[in-house]
Length: 136
Image 1 (cartoon, rainbow, N blue to C red):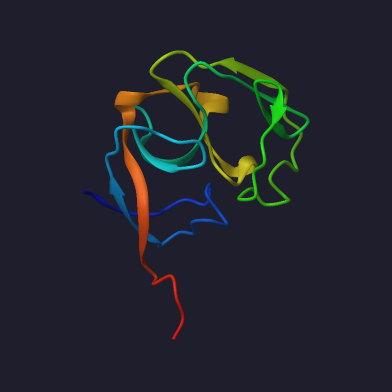
Image 2 (image 1 turned 180 degrees about the horizontal axis):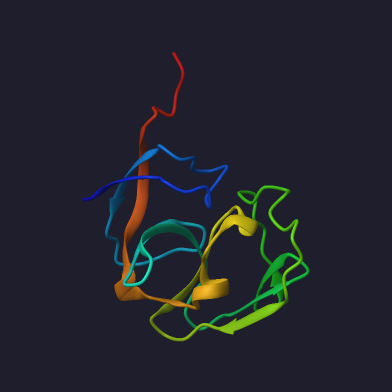
């Protein structure tokens, strides 16, 4: 059960630098969950699960499509696609996932690194420990 401190800005506004998270291994991954990934070249990083095995994931004009259907992404800030990017499409193979950061213009994710294998995923962010999620 690792504790992870957020360092970068790729998951803002959901997660800001300094936030402490509890991460736990789970047998299944659901779309929209934030996961901790270990990559030999880029170390540890947090991203959101977007594409699941067996799906076709595309990005067209700043919209994510799952099997041709636009994905509702309330966690993505309105400024996520200020810089024009080329359209992309992935056929997500068995045992792999497409992961994206919420701050799309400020995220090193599957758009550049490609799909992530299940064995690279350490676990799912379960809860925020610091700062507390409430105000007194």
